[in-house]
Amino acid sequence: MLEIINKIGIWSSFLFFIITILCLYKQPYYLGGYLVFFSINEVCNILLKLLIKEKRPDDGLNEIPNERPNERPNERTVFNPSIFDNNEGADKYGMPSHHTQSLFFSCVYLYLTKKYTWLLLIQSFIIGITIYQRYITKRHTIEQLMVGSLIGSIIGYVSYITTKQYIYHCSAFHDKIGI
Image (cartoon, rainbow, N blue to C red; front, side):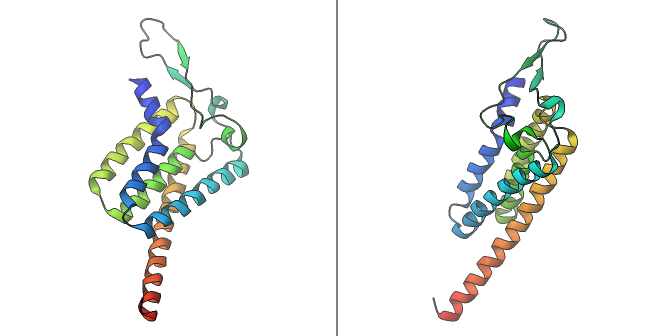
């Protein structure tokens, strides 16, 4: 079971990115806004990590509890975090959590754009699994996860509002010139 949780936690950011693109492909302005602000969100995360420089818990040892503690008590397994978690550069820092920042950014932006309650519920479930995975594998503290989710939510909201205003002004301009 923990292996499944790890895979969901590791790949959830990429999964949300693909889901958002698929949901917005018929709305090119919102899709373009998402892609631009997704990049801005990524840069913000890197800059914040390099500015704050808060280490990961236990320097991010990536340990997961043994699924069968009766067989080998007190054993912990080091898991391969993936190519995305290499503990180099900004990634060696944990504040704010990149995964939660990215997930909340995509979730907020997509929900405000599409208003799909069913998708919000599914995404919330995946976010819960990811937060749990990032915590039990000692990739982040609770504070790092919460700050990441707050920053991602704020950037997602501001991105949606900015994109919506851009679309409104473009359509008003097109109306004026008769396009």
